[in-house]
Structure formats: C-alpha cells, structure tokens
Length: 151
Image 1 (spheres, rainbow, N blue to C red):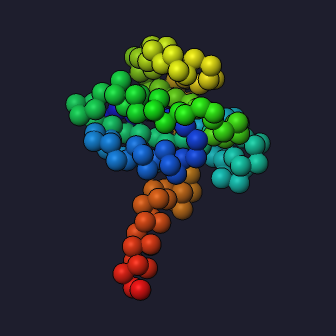
Image 2: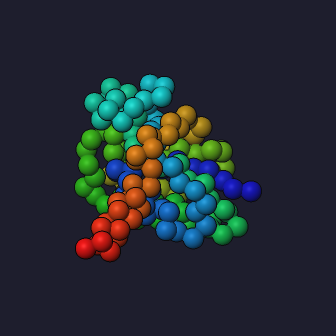
C-alpha cells in the first residue's frame, strides 16, 4: 500500500522533478496547499490572495523508501536563504499522525535548519495545479530533445 505526503520547498517544478527521480516514489503531482481558498488557480496563488504554497503531492511505496529517507531528501532541498515569497515557503502536510510525529522529530534532527520557519501540518486539502504545470521539466526536456533531433 502506498503512502501520501505533501511537500513544498520552492517552485513546484523543481521540487517535483527532484522527487520523481527517487526510487520508491510512485507518483507526483504539482499543486497548491496550506491556504484558505478552495480550488485556487496559479494566478490566484501568485497574486498572494489565497495563502497557498506551491507543493508536490507525493505517493510513495514505504517498502522501497521510508518516510525518514524521503524527508532527508526534502531537507536537502532547503538551502538557506530561502525565497521569502509565501507561495514558495517550506511546508510538509502529513496524511497521518504517525507521519506528523516522524516529520516533527526529523526536523529537530536538522540543526542547520533551526532558524527556518518550516510548517509541518496534518490533513489539509491539496488542489492539483493546472495540467501545464505537471511534470513541467520532463515536458520541456522532451520538447528540447525533439528540436535537437530535428536540427
């Protein structure tokens, strides 16, 4: 059975691309979470009127990758100084109380991140981003490879 966690660590394009390459990640989806507006658009989130952050919903196979290992990948993505824009804030949304407990303990074990405000929450809604944001780097790479072959 797969588990689900939602993470934000800046622009969702790069976060999604980095996570997709990790063994045990079954599926990723760019989206929005952590705010108060239902079904926000990219334009709404960019305008700062929704409270949402750009995030990635991650489905993972815990028999292949543990949540602790996945969180270590997440912590490695957070290189201070972080973008001060609230839409790019670091955020973890857990699906269960056990995930929440592990995420909180894992953060405490990261002394290099002690000064960062990293939200760790449980069971908040996730809103998928528009299709053109999904696996954006992979789409661009495919387009560039096709153009390079045509030249």
